[in-house]
Length: 430
Image (cartoon, rainbow, N blue to C red; front, side, top):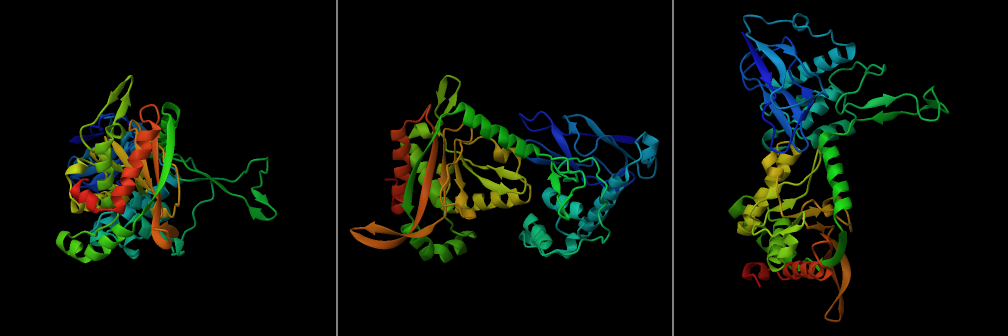
């Protein structure tokens, strides 16, 4: 008896997906719910589990193929019955490069079976591409989970791969994110060498997420009248509150008291005062949102993602910190769902975690504004006629001038500044 493996129902507004990586190979025995392959959509990576136990008899799509919901992508046969070899199903004989990739995938799958912490799609792809043993890499994630940063750190230290065999120098067709080496640089230098040095280039296919981000950013630039206004905030009071209550807050709530909860709270209060900042343009209409769903930009292994903190006005400082932390972990492990990324009425991005001192963030359509946070830096400022050193941060508010006037944008940013410099206002809502 054979079982068809089909592409699952894709998230709303997602028409198709790209085969990112196979984790089981033809002829391999699988258990129910084993992850057969990863599908990459515009927003998230979906895992396709085995619908039942058996043997993977046939694979009908390869890495890089585009599939739609309901497409048959593989055939499972009963383990004691057909166990058909790939040739019996009409599959073509794999190339040497594909066989090498298959062997690496099988080795990685075996290592994952031995481990109590399954690998995320991003980590799995790295260990397969570099032929690494995941059990030999120190893991720093929660519950002993191996993170992408752990693998990159391992590679940066020049640690040996699982196999000592060198990669073949023959150029093979590139699929997915696998880099291609172009031995012939531009300008007709077919030798690939110049002054005794080999000049290499890598060509990597753009991921669907990166392509979608690029599309939306260009769309924002072309359809919105984007302006940016700046201000700076003295974070002395916030620092003092965090210093005074850090330990008791963490003991009571099990989460660290960071800066983001203060900024989300300040933004929500400012949005209440200036509803147009929380609105969006829909054709010839202005849509005013009576709720506050704040997007928090997060860097993930696949690129920038913006998970949504819903009903932020109803959440406590502890609830906000827990949700932001959970989103950060899910983003690093490739676990964000389509629901996590859908919607949002306002966004916050923090370039300061990477050392940015000042920037002009780009709108996240169809939202009308986005707040940019930056690096906290001690600077001399004048307070009550005296020069003092204070922890200062530049704030940037990019907004859609089609909807938001400069006066409203400036006053909105000043409101955030005032709330952060006197955090008691956040509790008293004044």
